[in-house]
Length: 173
Image (cartoon, rainbow, N blue to C red; front, side, top):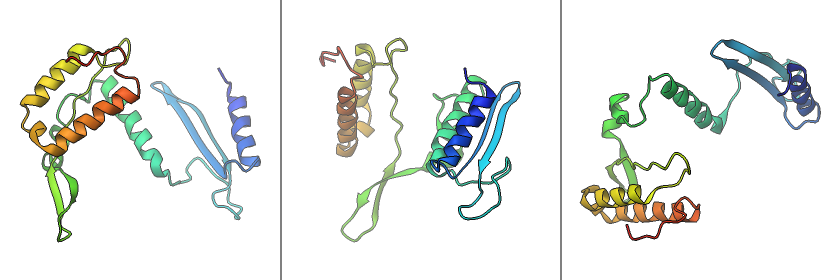
């Protein structure tokens, strides 16, 4: 495990080599902060140093931060991923999915349907029984009757096959 001096050295080297213009890093456990450091400049071409309270734009990293926070809430028993999201955020009950646009340029919307895919915890792959039950549910689901949804399910299934998630599945359902 890296010690704090090696972490500082790595961050400092990244800034000095211009691989990163500036870095603010904080690591914590449930017991408190175990590391914090700031390196580089707040703005390129200016002298103000990066500090622990520097506000930065994290762009597409919001997904990673949100996923981490959600998993922490799951660990603490404060969030159940099997519970409908609309029970936590009521506005999600009326969410719509854009399917495309009609000839007049108006959006074509449909109700959002949550796909439930789980896997065998030991292999990370979908089991034959799981696929069979999902296929049966899809056949009887009103959402699965739409061409768009069937196409999405097929494309998702094909993607799982390409990624090797269905290794050993004979396809007989």
